[in-house]
Length: 286
Image (tube, rainbow, N blue to C red; front, side, top):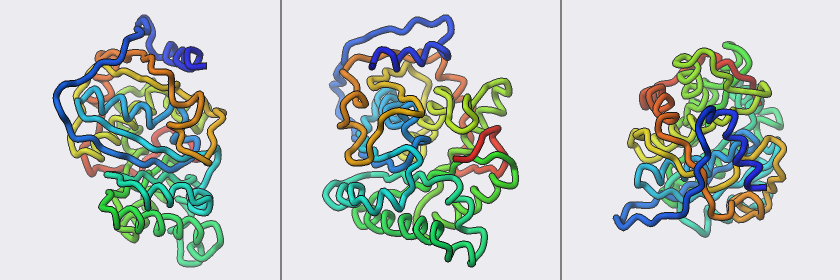
């Protein structure tokens, strides 16, 4: 299965061979960042956590991830099952990334009346509970701002993300803005092959932007060694345990290389830190 998933890169790496490599060690000590990611298929499609680890390794900045996700999952479901809360209570993290369903995120701050309705109230509770546990341990909390089907919906998403981040003492991770910047730099690119979920390039763009927002350092284009399978939308991901510990998701130690020449255009397209956009990044909501 590992080999099959890795072949998904072939559609992007046109004319470039996939190069198996062996693990290498870095003799220079470097700070390791521990990142907890919570979300649904927007997080696990193409294995965003694995791409984030690959970006960190390429920069000489080790990143360890622990990720809890499920198809169509919501933050309140992850709060209620208790696994993420237990991880926050028992382990230390430098950053916690919270990715909610786009429909919930967009609607929750539309009005006071909307906030009181069950789905929004539950979502806001989950953001608050997770953020409180994370900040007690000194972790930076990032509200993953997703993408919408049009400018109006995208505006709701962006405004809601900012308001939720402010109420939870968190920071917005402007995923939609990063993808819009990539689309602007490469207008012909297909960011969402199925209309909802990110392409491999889009997920890698998110990993580069996430690395920058977590570490505070802009990434430099270098070869990336991806050591875990690039998961499809319908991957058998269970929220009962961290993705990194599930058979078939963690990888077998082998790696493929994404050449720096293919990373460079993405790095060049990264928007400036703190910039945001309410424009539709040619995507669809989730």
